[in-house]
Amino acid sequence: MNKVILMGRLTRDPEVRYSSGENALAIARYTLAVDRRFHKDNEASADFIGCVAFGKGGEFAEKYLRQGTKIVVTGRIQTGSYTNREGQKVYTTEVVVEDQEFAESKAASQNNSQTSAGNRQQPPPPMPTDKDGFMQIPDGIDEELPFN
Image (cartoon, rainbow, N blue to C red):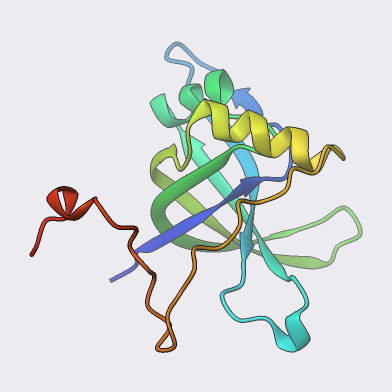
């Protein structure tokens, strides 16, 4: 089985081309920056994964996806090779996108682009916890809890 699910941000706007012929097909290429789950020495690290979307997926990417947009992609990994102009064999690995969707709201995406541009907003303070690490629930909201 060849199935991959990724969540990350576009490193730049998608590059979209159309195939030649009577039924032109959109081909969108973009790179996702995918955060690694565990960081060595608390350093932020990411993998940069090439993705290609064909047809309607390519048209969607052209119309809606921009640098910094956080998306979830499902697809399959495809490998290939070609010989470059210098006569060297180049090996490629990319994700062929089967489905792509937004991973955050437009407002959250705009807020993220503002914070990355230098307007750092302070995150909300953490909720107080008890000695066991459980969040303390304020008095008077028992009726909102799904359990009692």
